[in-house]
Image 1 (cartoon, rainbow, N blue to C red):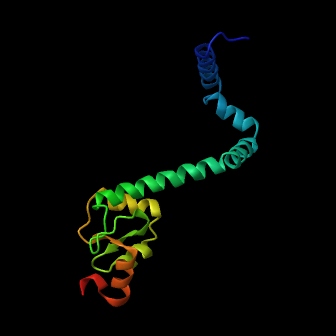
Image 2: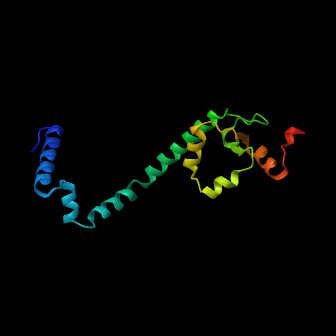
Image 3: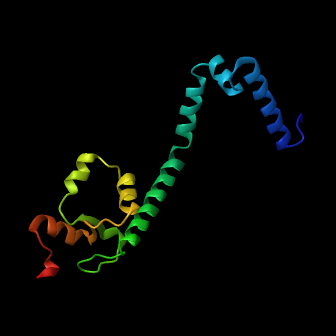
Length: 144
């Protein structure tokens, strides 16, 4: 074994990079990419496919946590009927300006980050039934 420890390997890599910078004006990895064009993209593509399922699961979890955080930030229940089941809750624009956000093409992630940035006075948390009935009929059946 040429190196005794991980620190020795790191130190040797630093020296190798320093030599490459002094001699060629760039890092060792940049030199390797120049010498082997296309292989870097091939490695990235292979790595992307190899870890695709893990990345998707991680992203799903991050989005779910963000959604729960935003829901709890807005009170955690429907303002009209008091429904607390997270799967039924949705965000409603009080001034019916939801089409504006769809035109801006905000992603799921950026929309929830926007909601979390500060409590919006024109937004409220409603269950899906109350939200749809307000959209279709102009009022919720609970208001009768």
